[in-house]
Amino acid sequence: MPKCLFALTVLLSASLQARAEAPKDFEPLSPRVSCAALLKEHLDAAVGAAVRIEHAVEVAHEGHGYCEVDGTIAPKIRFEVRLPTSGWTQRYLQLGCGGLCGVLNVRVEHADDCVPVREHAIALASTDMGHQGQSMGDGSFGVDPQARIDFAYRGVHLTAIAAKALQQKFYGVKPRRSYFMGCSDGGREALMEAERFPADFDGISAGAPAMNFLVQNTFYHAWMYAANHRADGSAILTAADLPALHAAALASCDAEDGLKDGQITDPRACNFDPNEALCKSPGSRQGCLTVEQVEVARKFYEGPRDTAGHRFTIGGPQVGSELAWRGVFVPDGADGKVMSEGAALDTLRYLAFEENPGKNFSLADFHFDEATFKRLEQLHPLYDATDTDLSGFTARGGKLLLWHGWSDPHISPINTIAYYQGVRARLGADKADESLRLFLVPGMYHCMGGDGTGSFDALTPLMSWVEQGKAPEVIIAAHVDLPPMGPTPGTAKHDLRSPAHLPVTRTRPVYAYPKIARYAGKGSVEVAESFIAAEPLYAAPSSYEWEGAKFMAPHFLKDCQVAAGKLKCP
Image (cartoon, rainbow, N blue to C red):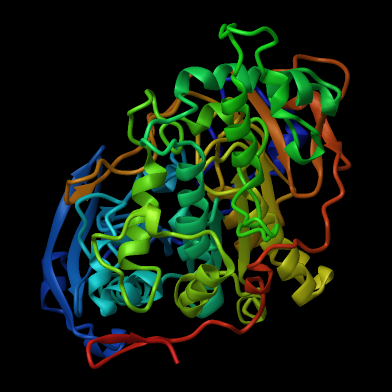
């Protein structure tokens, strides 16, 4: 039996642990043909495009072998599939790719202690999504309209078909259950699969999904850069200023849930005014902010808007996320670089519009107005994964596990909450509850880490739900110091894993939304068993007023084509 339970150094109560029991294995199978024989296989008919198998070799890894198959789906979609050479449990797991991808990222996150994953008893696969980049933020591939389509949805879908065909060739049968896991753009890819290709996967884990891709990578990141930079290009708020702002946020909001523990359970229940971090006496700069810096923080929380009050994003970074701003839109020094500038520029220059403005386009050329927003709507049906009609996926018994960190600086968790609510409204609460769960993790940064409990096993509850019908109502999460997410830019292949059995300093239950964890009044606050499920601190609105509110809607997705060298989305 696979024990895909997160390795904790603290014993959890039997009742909590029982809710995360791993499903029984399917009958393990061995290959019917040699690994090398896959080089001769022809997958064109199955995939619906020309497929070239470039190499198929057996690899020994940590005492467990797998057949590594690399190939290309025309025109340029590279993929890698790893097929266990013994003990295959008839399961398939496809892994998403973050940023703008461009690399092969065979890395399992939020399931690293899962025994079948560690022992290669599950077939794995991933794709570069149709282009090779200098980094995971390189958008220059967008000069090729076909590469845009492959990035948007075609690469992940065709890789799923190719990987399943290879499993049938290798083992004589297709996988009995197929899963997809991804975070950030990988979360967008996950939702795109459920929306566009509901038959590809039985269970999908979508973390911090960049579903509002166009708005996220243009209005959001352009605003975060512009709000913090003077006309001469110098930054107003720097990393050294963030602890003071974070301390003020915690002082204002930490105890809202009845427990002062260094993390904010639900930032929406806070009424934090960044003016609380303002220096109280002229000339004082010790652990406080200037008027100019307070205004920057206010703009961050509020998000982009024009003078008429039009809001161009659904939500900004949440109170409590301040330390995570470093490097994303707050540099180390006044002249330092931040991710937001590059993310916005690459998207605006090469991806956001039907006609690219070119490499000389600067953020000074970008306008936060309705006219610019309307231009973005042209490619909304290509990139964005906000279709709320999941009836095709749920009708097959598909299960979708959404999760997001409250302290995510890259993508506001309000996006994911709004999508969750939109799907429930479309399907009806009862039908949605059969196939949809959302988990919001206090203090968690983008995809992992943070000052909350950002490490957990998302695969076990998903597998149990799909295979045994046990819907997850709680996930046990832990605080550990994890390495940065994602592969190192500039290398062709990666097999990065978070080190197992890192020291655990805190465990907490994360209950399915809208429930929250509340301290039971006795026991250590560092142990999950001291907490119980409680009603939410905040009543979410049924709808959100912003310029893209109509994006959370059914049946807007389009299949785009290349005609006369140009991208066309009819």
